[in-house]
Structures are given as structure tokens and as C-alpha cells.
Length: 133
Image (cartoon, rainbow, N blue to C red):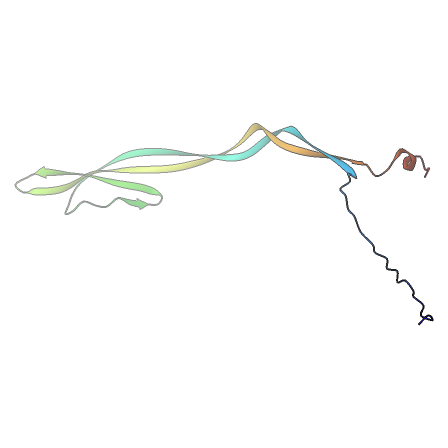
């Protein structure tokens, strides 16, 4: 068949290639800074007063440590020999507490770090900067 015509078939192909390119430089710096401040707060001091209170009373058993109106009472006992052994409450130790609040100011230094970031665009050339292409 001489009348056969042969047509070549053409096919196009596309290929994508990638490469790493620096487009920007970033510089990060830490800058330590100090600030003088005065810290204000309240401190509490507790004062303890001890009084010995004579009781001289016979008891059947040792009383327990107790608290009355904010006062801690610690019984002190002794055994005395009479014809028989008896328990006497000799004295009580009363402990009074009082607290005083006082404002204080303490100078101190607080440190913190500031971050500075500088960027340099590498994609702009000198011609881009001056408006020329």
C-alpha cells in the first residue's frame, strides 16, 4: 500500500528540578539586660512570751496540753510522797504568741534576655534596589 502515510507522533515531557538556594540570612542575637528594682513585701515576726503560773492543786491524772484563747498551756506535774502517792499539778507554763507585720523593701536585680533578629533578603540584587531590571 503505497498510499499509506506515516505520521510521526511527538510527545512532550516536562521535568522539574529543584535545588536549594539561600534566599535570606537570619541573624539572632540574645542581649542580656539587667534592671534594678525594689521588691516590696511584708515580713511577719512572731514573739513568744512564756509565763509560769503556780497552781499547787492535787489531780487524779496528768492534764493534757491544751490551748485556751490562743494561749498554749503545758501542765507541769510532780509526784509527792504523802502516806500514799498523789499527783499534784505544780504549775502550768503559758505560752503567748503575738505577731507583728512589717513592710520591707529589698533592692534586687532582675535579669532578662532581649532577642534581636536581623534579616537580609538575598533574592534582591543591587539592580532591584535601584529600580533597574
